[in-house]
Length: 476
Image 1 (cartoon, rainbow, N blue to C red):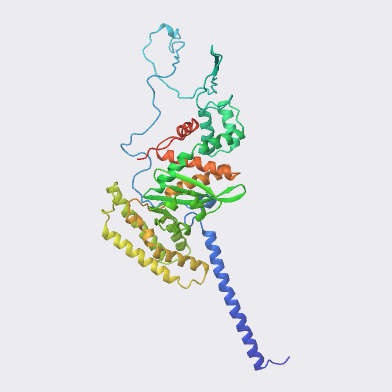
Image 2 (image 1 turned 180 degrees about the vertical axis):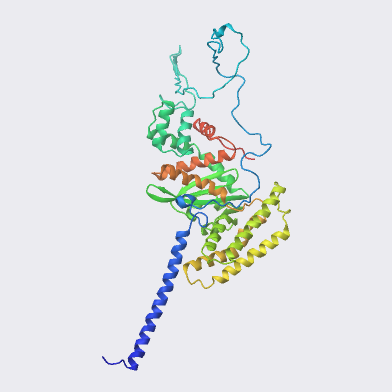
């Protein structure tokens, strides 16, 4: 075999160089893909918007934004405490006499009573359904006219369930997330009342139908509020992904369901189109299309995104994302301290301005370094980090609005609490079978969530609803 010529060697080198360039490019692509997949695998409830339930058995220990108070857990000194106490007038008394003297065996009834030890048992009596018959008497007047008595309100059928049973059905199905089947079983076993799944559906539909006035009132109150919180989440309905939207204040909650996640659903809910206050939400873009409102972005979401950047950054002494997160938390502490000193403050005039300026300097310098470090955006992961840094720069006013307006909170937990109940329902009893059923469920959850915010119990609110007069909070 002859030795290759110089020309052949030059050709071979050129070919190998081309192959090397291709392999290097492929290696860079694969490295970026591996980093992207590792970031997806590492995502959990601490560094992303994934719910804690998705963390599995290896979930990280919870990490609160609140600082330790230094106090021991449980009731603090001076706390009144609550426990089961004896009552002065029990419903029934059973006396237990000793049979014989414990010393000589003589009949104890021959002795004199010198004391009584009281022990009380709190229990429910056997619960049975009480049936009330309404007899509508018809009388014939001497003039020949027959007149029948008028039935009381809410007594409209020969046989029907009363308001308390109706309230219990809705309470178990919507308030405690039981399925229709388990709700019917609970009524049968607890009260001896045979209830079908169809009855549960019918009762729920009637309850929701009685909430039109309440829902309109709630929508008006949230629309007129100076600050409102907004959020959305997916819900499986009729085998499809639908979207549940919440709008809430400290006193009102409005929950709706729609086929869409974006502006069409927000318009249908009826709050944001006329809202002119401060809308607190995450960075979901459709919220920003409502330009009549001011906006405040959720810092809890930002902290999770920043934690993801910190987790995906090689071990170093310093990371721009960690400095940004620390600055945000320090600003939160400063605002909390000012509000604690003056809970009714209409402005944050007691803020330590020197400390605020120092924290803002750290925040701004960190996010600008983060933006510059990832400016090339060579990979999807770098592009994601760059987008976060840019958003923290361009939306600084919205992220830090909690430092200038005492009515604006640091996060969007107020809206997420309402949304969390929807996810809990799906976890306990699965998806809803019809869109109409989902709309009824959301309407009643709006009613119950608002009642809870006014310290009104679920059962009381549902009983009044079953009586045909939906509870509506007074306008303060």
